[in-house]
Length: 378
Picture 1 (cartoon, rainbow, N blue to C red):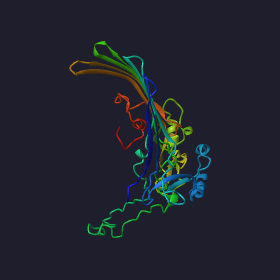
Picture 2: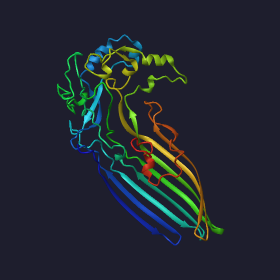
Picture 3: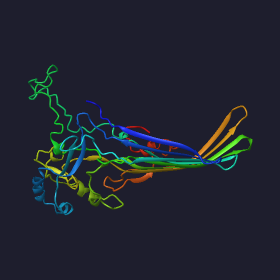
Picture 4: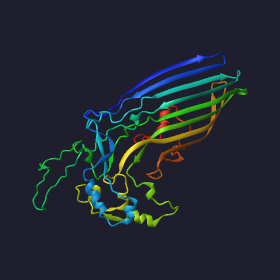
């Protein structure tokens, strides 16, 4: 199988403009277009159709209506079984696994202004986009793999599976996309966000550098960063917040209600996972897509910000030696995780990179994706 791949087109224009003997400007503009990830044989999930009605919905609704649980029916008047996976190249789906943004324009601006022979002011601003491919290094191949169990005997006396012939009844073939919307029904699934946004970082800086007597040079700078559209994981099949307790202390009664079991309306319908047992918890039936387990995807709701005051002093000696000391006072904050799975936006916290980050990276893409890159270490 050919590895999944995407392509990036880049264009860059940069110019230095010396306005006069004191002021120099650096102007730049960068534009990027990234192609969507594709798989050579279209063996991948693309998205999720939340409106598809599963064929067994009517039967499950009838069984749910017969439940004798007034409190549950007040919370969930009618049980629905909606949603299903979409596959590349199937039922009109494109080969690309998602749509990519086309407006990734990145201006850059810098200046250097000489106040006098001993003092210079420097500043700059720039936007840096991260690649979608940083998070999408592989495809989602639900349905394209299956395990065949080795069964040495079925009655405990006669050996049917041996090392020379471990699978006398053959090897199971994965269904691929043949099951369509019913793929992995009853179990956890994942899919690509069909309209992802490219994470980007804005960086700005303003500093003053001054030469003092006796070979000393001092510099004071302010540096700021703002990360936007950081990609973060999200499970869209969780109990909505309106069903959770709002008490500031542990609510044992609500917990008991949510985890309590009732007769499973999906039992006997040929659904593994959530339909395998005769009973099911109330909270499972409160989920938006109760016929599935977790449904994982990503959003671009994450953001971060960084502010720093940087001081530096340098002593130059006549023999070529230099001694330098620097101090940075900074704060790096992020909102890249949901406190509760059903929260509308992530919670703001001190970044877990706060202690390690002394100076922000020049490449803004690294900061913009600092909490959106599970497979890479920062």
